[in-house]
Length: 312
Ligand code: TMO
Image 1: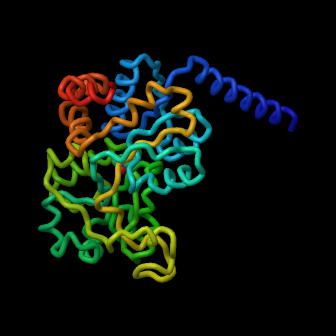
Image 2: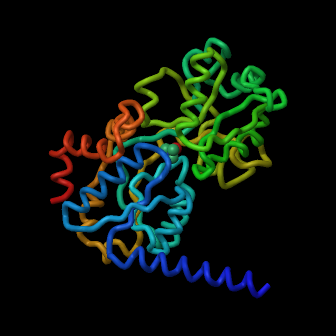
């Protein structure tokens, strides 16, 4: 008992010491997540902050808990707040007043179940979700008990896919990939073998430059669908709808950011990425095989006229 208490107390002390140390250098803390455009964009944002004289730390962190970390001032900025994946976590902390909704990028986003073009031949009636469900057996695997398999993203993207399957009564199971790369490997295997495959995908992303395909059309998204069980075709369940189709992409900053890092704040409020920007940031890494910092440098080299205005 007393040994485990000592260990717990020791750990808490270590975590505290670490978070104090992490802030001691006064750098801007920028989170890094598990998809390519975010990693490249984080370095672009960081390099812009460095140009105006700020120091920058890159902090690998879970893409949901980062919103709470902004409230605790451990993280200063999230530059890719995707409505579909993070809207709820983000809007909660904005409502609490500890995070500021600073910028809405021009980019419009969608995150949803998606299949490559050949699947439409295998499963007539797509992209309607009911047609997909009627073909569920084609998406079955040895270990899925006859149910179709949907390849979801890593769990921190929190897509509520299992809830959606249940609320819509679909004959599918959700298999969460461990990484974005694992999703793309499933997609490529399906294409090579001409097999039915349905994965989580999003736009803007590099996929659209490489493969033809479509999003599955679920019942149209409504804010009430994820708040109110009685809304939608299943009167007893939330999530009986698709994700937003013209979703936002935002920049959120911690409430204290303006005061703690005024030069970075002034830049952040000018940043504005388009669909093409986000797609390129992803493409440079996933299609062209560049390192993240190389990709950030390429984007900066090609967009100097724009970011010069952002930093002035
Ligand atoms: C958050 N994401 C863009 C991977 O859907």
